[in-house]
Length: 496
Image 1 (cartoon, rainbow, N blue to C red):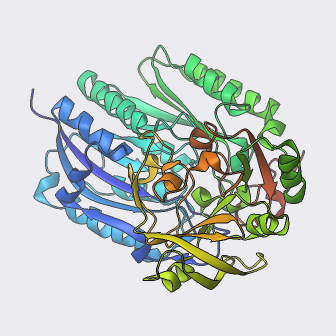
Image 2: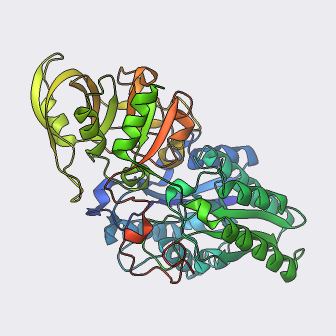
Image 3: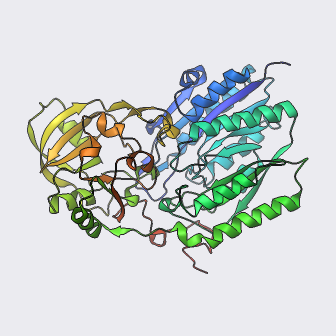
């Protein structure tokens, strides 16, 4: 048998359409051609796919990878840069004699005027004569907002099964295995799209608890007898698109699975999601009440988790609510990470132990009270680079195990430790603190700008955890978001 030739491409962004500002191409990493092959084994889905390709003896034809950290709406040039580079490779001699396409996607990428970027990408691929008939496999984030176009134009896109996303690399392994099987056995794979009328905030989408736990269990029980995969998509509520929300896809062998079986599985999935719909809207504490409760109980470290400031969901990460509360109640020995490139720049070149007047945080989101004036003692300056302690961390799903927070500073303000970064960096790994000389298990209260992705790391050290209400573009109060495109009626915006 001749060596299989696989075209590889990646387009990754979780777009928060309610976040302020715009992300230009300069905020995205663009990797071209064979430079992409250097990511083999880096802990990301791409790196794991490359290892599997080597194991199966495939020839990988790399095209382009464009990826950005979750955030505000990307400018139109981001998608067009990807497409121009992809189209060049597709039209080149490299793309002759291809057997399949493997895509590393997110599923919640929005561009101005294009609410379904992944669906648009697949449509464009199908319009290229050389690629029109090739089977398409790949990976999607569990928080993808899936559309009919994504299902229609792909054969084997598989979703992460875990949130936090500890199985992102494993999902690429599963997708590669499915592709190998389909090519070897000449399977006629298709994808059934199953929508719902449900939207859950990120706090309601952890797979260790309901409602996601039961849905994932049901999905696994149906993966047999020609059903190759049942994907559970929690959706990404902070994207205003017609298809935002909970959905499912069924990847099946058309020669073995009858439509009535697909119909039955679809009904069962939707019914279970509807039955448990209220469990997807967890309760949150008022910040002051949570802080006082934690201090009274004294079970430290205790986490003050801000879903509205979820950096992994596109929030800026410089909100000041938790810091203000810690200062107000004088909870020395606590810690907060803030994105604040301006303050880091002011500290550049200063000596450890020196004292400086700073205005920290509060510079990007209009509903935040604004920067906090502080007198800060500089503890250390670093380059902000570190390797994930947990190579299966949720963070690895975005860009691998090597993390760059940009130039960073650790300062002390009234006994509270602040880690100031110049690049947004989600709290998904304890190495974020330890690489900067701070042991998080010794802190009292820790401000965590996340929803669920932090749990894989922080649950190992925390004695208590509180989801708290603060201002931010990732608010769990979905009724407060100014949706314009979202299909209606939909729960919880429309109870009926």
